[in-house]
Image (tube, rainbow, N blue to C red; front, side, top):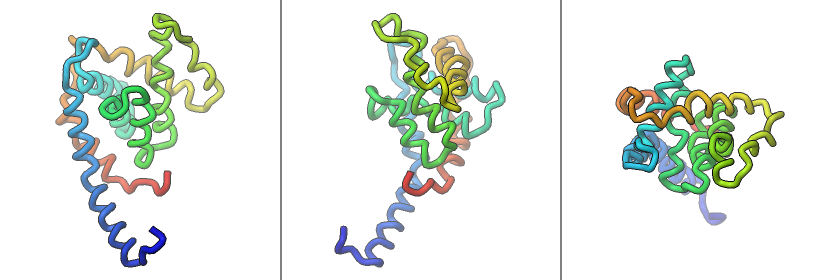
Length: 176
């Protein structure tokens, strides 16, 4: 790369800008890939739709609604650290607060089940002094852990698509 010229890197930057213009399409396709049966009685897509519908019903802002819809999208690529992958995807487009919540929601969600699998359900408490601790607790309590209900009437993906497109139409933060 040290042999590249200004013209070379202007071409690379142009290509990257074009590539970023398709980010919403990729994300929406990944969501569709999550529409497969799971042991939860609903699909991973339906879980995201339920979570986002609940967030909207509770008056969350659009950025938070989209983050809630996408909070488990990391399952497509990295089930072992899905929270961190989802946060990495969203971080250039969202507030530090929302990125932190998405990055840590997997650990915080453990409060509801870790004790059943020989883990510490209070592991999240190591972040109790963090400014976004309570917001992450609330995210899990009100939107994530409640959204495995096969009878819940969530809004369809088409309803959220314009929100996803607006989020990824933002200029991503540089070098995040």
